[in-house]
Length: 203
Length: 257
Image (cartoon, rainbow over all chains, first blue to last red):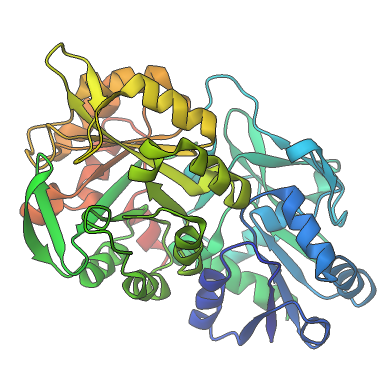
């Protein structure tokens, strides 16, 4: 059973429908019991880092997520803003602390001449030895749409890169914590294959 | 490297898929869900749905069909038509869409853009800039009932308010299938650093090559070419690929299926 974490932000429906396609039972919830009984956790997200962290705390999810992940070793996949929330800090709106599961900062794109947000299909690099490489041969374009990006403190935590005005972190992975900056649930067959890989790997 | 997006637009009148010519004379051209299914099976990059009469008919979007499309198709989707308040935005996002496409409310109340950006982020907001060439050669934003506004003014306003993308339609070239209005996009490209989508006038793959060769832009949308010719989005991308542009080809995606 997968619990898709509901903290009032994010495209929960699309993630649920993608999991339905994989035959993975799933529910959308923020109740403690639903986190405890889940085998996998997915943290989607779209919107403000600051508001997201506020919502997580208000729903008791900050402690619950950290407990499930750090004490019980439960697999967690963060998508888009969900991946960014795994960081230590996000500078948006004056700055706020993240879940601090993967050391790093979430900063705004700054490069001059770059169209911002980073919107569209872009190709991953440097993923061959990572969990992403486990999908086997496939097209490596995924759909990105974001204004801020994750700057990891440890290169070892970066699972894949993408080129946008320079190298940008496309995926992170540390132990049982995974993240994708792009939207696998919006990346058609290529994205579905990656979600399947996450579940196979963490089974 | 970021790939060029080739985006089919589905315009509907609340019930059926329609296609206009210079923003007038809509003809029925089919069923929107069926069209979306076909596009998805062809691995399109993204879709845009707009209910082009919702504002003037003062009604809301038909969301059950948006949901139906997204349940089947794991595809990025922008949805527009009569969106006026945060409840409307919430309904669209809950149906699984990635972006709201705003026009009337953006022209009347740019502050609304900021409210949406605060809640959903700038990337969730696409502003439709319907540009019509004026007698003096400049471009103004066209609306069926609001007075025209110079595009430079409108674009600066919406960008400052928190827009995440500009969907720039040429009213004059819409449905004419004689090529894009290159001059319009050259101007807009200089005015803004937001992602831009050119739309209006495509009739054959070569028109897209002319656009990308002449303008700093990374996305183009069209409709008539798919309704009235045999060309598919992949035909267009293959033309661009042969001209050296970065695109996501169906043959590469399907190779691994």
